[in-house]
Length: 194
Image 1 (cartoon, rainbow, N blue to C red):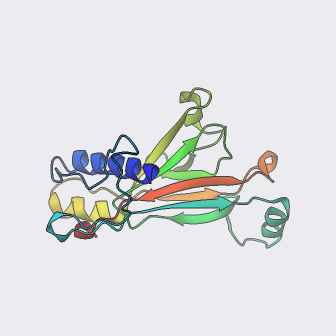
Image 2 (cartoon, rainbow, N blue to C red):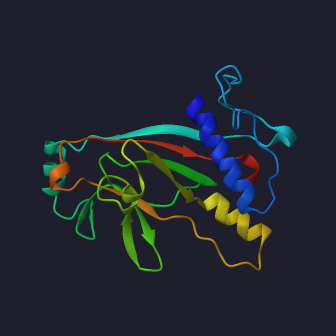
């Protein structure tokens, strides 16, 4: 519950700041600081009926030698840009999405850089973000989802378009085969914006 509340708080701050005060309130459990303050409420109907459909879930990419060899033996199945994919490129339907970046973990999360027209690795020891972390530290990557892009365009029709973040998860490189990749993902979904 603590991780859910922390993620909700981070996303509420992102939503409030990115919409320039368009969302001033925080939802219940956003930013709680102790177990004593926490309410064991995972679904919240806020003031004015805006439902919180946010979700926190985990993904485990096994990356076993057998699974990777089987996928490679399937020809072009699951291969893009010469990389074997664990999860194909997509954008999320949410407002904001948070995913932790563990500097010493198995990499695989890539986001599309439109300016340079290339995929950028966001986690693992080969990530450029890893250079910014001290040993034992972690960070989070925030993605813009379809819900936020749509809301922003509606609120600011004359502003430059914001596109949802295109991302994917690639299979491990040769020296990482056999190591599992685990991640926790939070997707912010408030009914009034979806």
